[in-house]
Image (cartoon, rainbow, N blue to C red; front, top):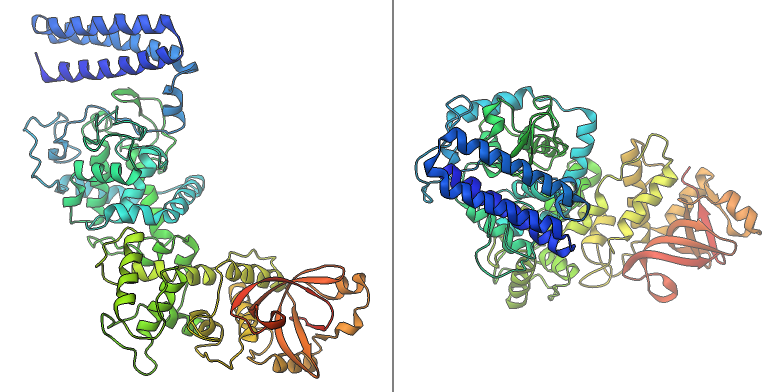
Length: 600
C-alpha cells in the first residue's frame, strides 16, 4: 500500500466527517446516510488497495471523490462549505508534504520529495526558486483595479500592525509577513486560525489538521498564530530578502502542487498580476484549471506595501526593512515628511531619545527622559515628569512594552517610540485633500484631526510635547498657546494644499488682530447683528478672537456658525472662562464678546 493512498483516504474521511456533522445539525438524514455509505466505500478501497493496480485504485478513488463533491454541493444550502469557500476565500492546498521545501526550483521533476522530513532543517530558498521569484518580480505589472484592492488590504494590515508585531516579538519575522498570511488564509479574520482559516473555536480541520496541539480550544488568535509560526519553522528564518520572503509565503501554502505541475505561477503570490490568469484549488486537493482566484496575491501586496512606504525601499538582495512608523497604526503617517522646514520642531518631538536609561537625568535642553515620561503619561502609564529616570519611569516603561506585545526589556527603538508618539503622528499625517478643497475647509479638517488626538499640556502649565509643537519648541508658565495652535493648524493645511501661509505666524493674540486689521481681514462682532449677517460674513474655518477690554486674550477656529453661538476648535482652552487651559478641544461659545478674522 503506498503512502499517497493513505493520505487520500485520510482526507476523504475528514471531508465526509464535515459533511456528516453539518447534515446532522440541519436534520438532513439523506445526506447523513450518504456520507456513511461513502465512508464505508472509502474504507473498503483502502483495505483492498494492496491487491489492486495503481490505475484501478485511482479510478475508484476518483469515483468516490465525485460522490463526495455531490454530497458537499447538496449541503451548500445549509452547511458552512459555501461561506468557507466564498467568504473566507481560503487558499486551498494540493498534495502538501511537510518537506516540500526540499524542492529545488520550478524546473526539476514535480514529484513530492521522498526524503524524511527533518524538523531541525531550516528551509532556505534555493538558487532555482530565487531566480524564478526575482524574474517574476521584476516583470510584474498590476492593473489599477487590483492596486485599489491591494491598497484596501494594506490599510487594514497597518491598522492591525500591533497584533502582528506582538506575534513575531522575539523573532526576526517582519510583522507584515504574518499580516499577508492572515489576508491570504482568512481574509484578516481574527476569529480564525492563521494556519488555514479554520475557526478558533476548535483545533484546525483542514491542513495542517489538529493544530494547535496544546492548549485546548477555543484559542486566542495570538496563541494560534504563534503555533503556526513555530509549525512552519518561520521563527528559525533569518533571511528576509525579496526571494526568501516570496519563498516562505510560497512554502506556507505549498510548493509541490498542480500550479507547479502545470507551470502556473501560484496565485498565492501572483494573483492580481499579469503572471497569473486562472487555475485554482477550489478546496483542499481539488483543482479547477478554469477557475481564477479573486484574492490579491502576496507578491502584489508586497509591492503595494513598498509603494505605500510600509516597507522601506531596498536594493537587490538586501533585507526588507519595515517602516517603524507603521507601528502607529495609521497608513497616512507613513507619508509624513518631517524633514521639511515647517516641521523641524515636530521632528524633534518625534525623534527617538538617545542615551536614556535608569538613573539618567536630562541636562540643559536635552529632554530625552522627560519626553519619554510625557508620552508614557499620554498613554495612561503615568509617571512623574521631572527628567529623572528612576523606578517609576522604569516600571511604567516596562508595563507599556508588555501592553503592546513587546518584551519588558525591549530597547526603546523607533517602532516603540512610534507607538508612544502615535497621537502626534496621526495629527501630523497628510489629510488627503482634493484639488477643489478650500483653505478654510482644509483648516477645519486638520484642526479636527488634531483635536481628536486630545492634545494637552503636560508636566506643568503650558508645557509638554503638544505645546512645544504648536509654539515651535517653546514652553512655559506664561506662554499661552492658543495663537500657536491656530497658526500651526493653518500652516499645516496650507502646506498640504501647496499654498503659502496666508498671514504671518504670531504667538500673541493681539498681534494676530493687529495684522488682520492692517490687511482688512478683521470683522468686528458688533457689525454682525443678525443670524443672517453672521452666516454670510463668517466662514467655518476662519478665526474667532475673544475681547478682553481693549485687548484680545484668546483665539480659536470657527467650526460652525449658529444663530446666537459658534462651535469652535481651539487650543489652550478649559481654564477660567474657557481660556488659558490645558486642552485642545471643541467648544460652543456665544457671539458676545467675539470678533473674527478671515484667512484672506
